[in-house]
Length: 208
Image (tube, rainbow, N blue to C red; front, side, top):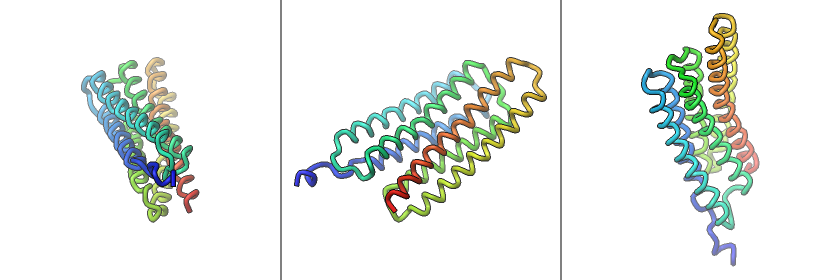
């Protein structure tokens, strides 16, 4: 009787989807930052604003988790999913601040390619998360997670090729350091997307 009086689901799936939307916006902003020659500080501030919106959604989710007696997913899964999703935004913000601090005004084609892969991964994360509330979409979610894994592998390949080119052709040691860090961080965004995909796969398998 007591359990029936408590909130059953709250707004967890809505919050997940909202946060995934911010992840996509952050990735789009990164692509714009790497593609444009505008004010780096302005781009970094824009991505920081997106990240702060994501933080607010995380706080809403965790507050709701503490207030909800019966949750639609395992409590640890809810906590893990929203925090892993937030890791994507955190690293996206780190990329933006690194570009500003290192004053990287002309991104390489490889950096832009990695940013495109970050965006593609983020979009797949959003698609998968938006389907999570319905068990009937389990197969589609698993397919999207496989696609996220493929994009991460592609990003890893691009990064290795970019590093090889950098060390063989770039003569400015300082630029080598800056671009190496940038490549690492951009590829790391796709890693964080893969982490989310792993959580989603676990949730789907748990509910099967």
